[in-house]
View 1 (cartoon, rainbow, N blue to C red):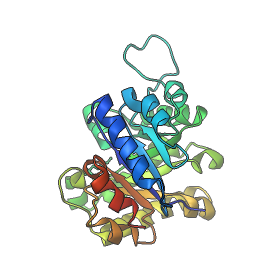
View 2 (cartoon, protein in one colour; view 1 turned 90 degrees about the vertical axis):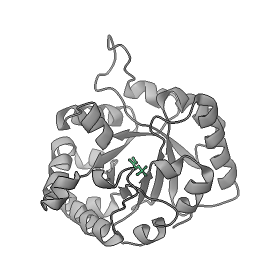
View 3 (tube, rainbow, N blue to C red; view 1 turned 60 degrees about the vertical axis):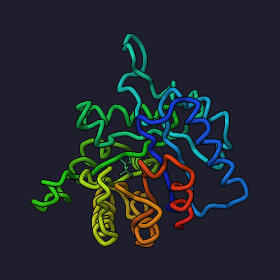
View 4 (cartoon, rainbow, N blue to C red; view 1 turned 90 degrees about the horizontal axis):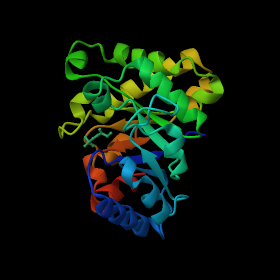
Length: 251
Ligand code: 13P
């Protein structure tokens, strides 16, 4: 069964204290609620273990925002998938456009990261999405297909079934400019079709495809009402309970 998921990506925000407070606040707000979606928060590496210990992780999953493309060893400053898993985190966001552009993460590097994440029992939330020029040139379908094929299509059907996809048009990230619900539906349906062309239709039907890019309390309901939009990956609006909770309640 396809899952609905609302995931926060805190990016490089909050000190440890602030992050733990935010996570505890969300935990408290959800205590007596039964959300109609899985809830995930993507914290900085430094917060993972403390946050995981401070909340009910059956109710709120914890995600890292990256992991190394190496298993272990002399890679100063890197954090491995095994280390992430050892904190209690269950997810890892991979391939975010900020990592692709600022840290030059290629399809090949991301393929390795996805494999290491899966090998360590983590669920990858794999981000794809086009830049504005590509959208304007009508190349967005092609771009997302290449991103999926380049990093995910060597996975076995069993492993592919563990992947969550997040479609995040780069022009909508942090800009206040959201894709319309119809634009999101159109490309999500296309992504599902691409998956079905490689794997079975049931695998495509069961894959959660999240939308990301200036999603907020005001637009979440319309976006998630679309049949192929299974939730969201939320940046700015995940940084306060006040803004994040209504998005969770959009389902
Ligand atoms: P915003 O919600 O701040 O636009 O960020 C989206 C995003 O990049 C989530 O990964």
